[in-house]
Image (spheres, rainbow, N blue to C red):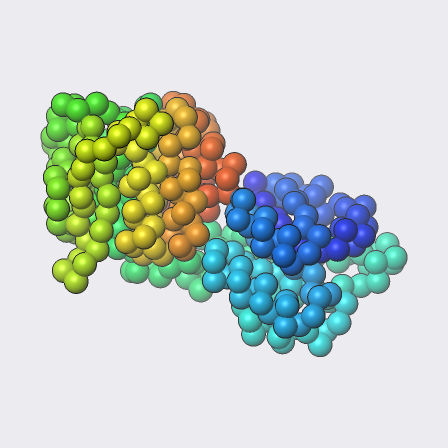
Length: 329
């Protein structure tokens, strides 16, 4: 589903709806009545694409476009009745511009909305396709950390992913809900069946290429970076939502330490752990992926992240290893 936030005046949106942008397959439209309401909406839930009606002053339009791109790296499609604002919008980061026809011309409006829908499909595909490097929020070789979170059903899902990964990949950090005493055995089993080196997290552990670190049961794992590179801290603490470790703690620290140099995956699991952390990652420009409903043992954690707009895309479990290798090698 392509979530589209349309920032447009209430009267204009009512007339747009009569021409049915939302009737196109896989397009879900949310409207905001002003640029400020639009920016507030982005604080609550991230859409896939923003469509901005540039009827407001050019300086304000530029501020809105720049703010959306700076905070969230979301493609912006600009609209206006006047072509004079086209260069300004494109210069400030809009991915495309469309000249609006008279709203009361039904034939022209139907054609215009069709073209707009086609552009939305195209921009969404470009933004989420590995081969379109100019539209992606990071370069193919710019990713430095892979973060994976999971709960119920996650042990087998993680094993399936790691078994098919290259040893030439950046470091991988994993939080799987599991009690103390079991994560060490889990790491050893994964190490035996995976090309990458898998070990249980320890405090101040340095990360290396081709290495996967599993959060220790009963301890939070956080990512940090200094002049020598990345390392993890493993610490005890009060449970969060009855859980320790948590995916949110790992994801939020990854957002701070790696930002847009991270790629994150939220796999099968019950509850909402990881959703807020994934949203923090996406706001920092990281590429974020949720396991899809059909391949999840429990579609809980990924669903919560999708509802927040925290994920760039959903993906079947069987497709994730190839996606990682293709994206990062």
